[in-house]
Image (cartoon, rainbow, N blue to C red; front, side):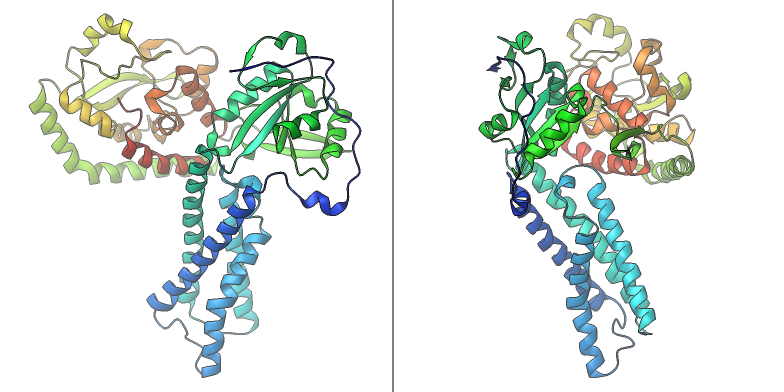
Length: 497
């Protein structure tokens, strides 16, 4: 731990310096240029591969281009014009914007916008020139390109995450503000290493004396010029935290002072766990008002979620019925007792229901729990042990593979659970007062943010925080992402015990 280094009166900014215009294009960190170049290559490859698929796997892709000159123009279009148009469309929609690399949905939303633009462009060109083109070939080449761009970009993002875990492709951040506020931002960004934000120092704007002689996770500074401090730490990003952004004049002068230095300025308001789609900036006479919308847990999106839940669960129960039979035989042959274990859990609006699972413990497990409480390895309302002696041999395998959760599809069909949602908690563990009760606004899920973020390895506070984040920021896109990530988590078997 680095010892705190503070002293003197805090000074947030000094007068800004005028710099030449071309200097403002120079950035203190240039890792994103290599990644942008890689994305251009990935997108070009995706567009060309889509052409290969359309030309070789559709019937008469060059229909309507009969003469040799027309065929030459067709091949020039699909092999040159369309790939170049894809790159220009992606660039025009901001798909190469470095701010969206590595985290969130915005990058893929912009790719979808580019796909819509390409569809409109090709349709307009065909209508304008009255070209009798193959509609199947057009559909295949555009759809294949869109899917390939998204898929390859996801692979590129995975590679970027691996780089960031190794300390490459990151932004070195100097946090500015009161120490408690800066420390909270520090903890938040450290929980998301994939974002690539690495705090390298804290510049305290008030209460410097109270930080003296404290053990701090990063060096703490005060009383010097903040930009000079950033240069000393080689920080390429300055993050103004909480109340430090309250003085508009200081913040504006700091922005002036950073012009031409290549360093980014970001503001981290005291508003956490609110997703981007709920936050909108509305400028009024130069004052940026931050609008926070209410959570959207109703409407057409919620109806689609319910329909998908029930239809997918019915299909899953039918498809998995042979597996259910094999698991039932294995459970009965391993230990005496029923195949299924049902426990009262708390659902939406505090209503209790019987949660179905394959039995993974001996039938006297609940009676033996009191004697094992001193060995509990988690906090909060749950009991967890990595080597729980109450778990059967077949039960250990079922838990590692998460197959023991599959019968909860019955609860989904009955409308008691959802495919994605907060974890269902036992009914006898309390009345869920305070923040925890907000989880009851939605149905609990078979999988959720806590399952794809560490499962049993998470603390109770982290599990609650993730569940509340899901409730406050729900969207269909979030559900699809969680389902996709669940597959990878189950295969890795991390945190399953």
